[in-house]
Length: 559
Image (cartoon, rainbow, N blue to C red; front, top):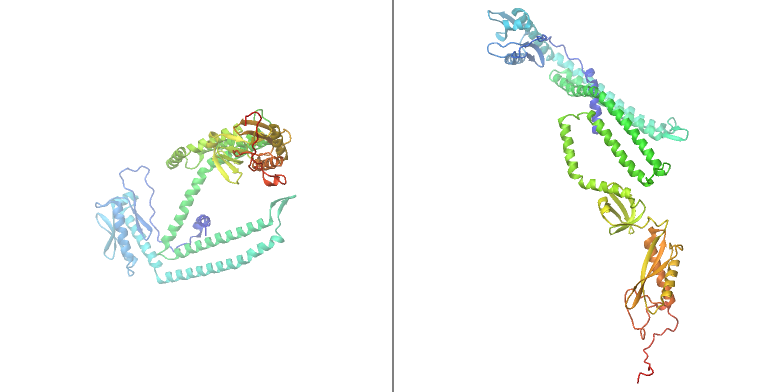
């Protein structure tokens, strides 16, 4: 059984414990304690009870013979306890003997207690009448004790306990039989009597859910009633025997006392509870109104000058935080225990922990707000943050989540994002196109116009490259042995940037090889006479032979 079940069972048992307690055998009438005087001297000791087996017989209010009321009561209680242990003792042997200074209550030659004039004056009676009253209370208590511990009384108590146990077992076995057949019948009603709850075509509660609720309620009913029966049986059996009757009182007190205090606390808390419910109700609907308003802003149905639609969700989160913080501040004085020293101590402790451990958190939150309203990027954009290139898959107040081109999830704290260099490839791609650029080096022997045409032709063959705006070429450097050409081409799909670059490079290679133009990247140089061209064999004409070295006479050189 789980702790929840145990807790609920304890609550229910406590509510019915007072009614479940069986009536114990007849007790001896105790002498009632008179009401305390209206004005009591501060030095006067409190009344001390004389107790026999948990039953109060009389009170001592005055000291006597140098003994305090507590000492007198303790001595008399101990003497009576030893007296009842003697089974042969007869209660009618208790007599009252009057002397000049006190009235003695004597049993078989032993003085049980002395009643003085001061005791009589405190009780508002004569000494002899008070002594007789005390003696009668002692006789009745001893007679009740003898009856309780008699063989006949104990035999009947055992019989009653056995009958109660048998009744309990019969009920428990009946429960087992009944509920073992009830659960299947409830489940069988799923297709017949129990149907789903609908309003027109909208299903509010499915039939399976209804059956599950009924079975759960039946199980809880069985558990609670079983616990209640066992509790009643235990209290009844314990109350039958004099040795365990005090345990019954203690068990009832252990359960009822906390419940009484809890009930009193609940009653006192009801006004504050009503106020907290009102605060929660108002806060809930204010948050709903804010969510509806910013939802309309996000959808474009409500337009605020200078306010972008992608600001709606983060702004709503900020507004919701302040609404909840304000509601908590207002409700705090009405929370139970908020004024206690323990609650204040815990609040201070939590505040210190928050202040010490939230420095980086607060910096990330502020950075997240700054990034949001800077509109540096949004979810779905292809960005470069530092050395990381990827798509933004989520942005929170604390971190930004990226998914790289290698399908790696990277979490970057917003403080690092704010301090890093951010490149957004998607911001202008769909409206103006993202310019992809790559460089090749071609020897001076190749005409630059031809190189431009070949590069532009390769760009036009590449998927995801836009025809308009047209690709263009820039000559970025005139090196010692070659010229650096930079091809620039527009694309509207930055997510395919890696694949587009790869395809563009393939088409550049094919286009230049088909035209018989050597690409001199990476940097290298070669002698044209006697060396094979760098163009792959598949692109060379049939019968290709590398040029041989030739020596020619130049007219006029004197040779």
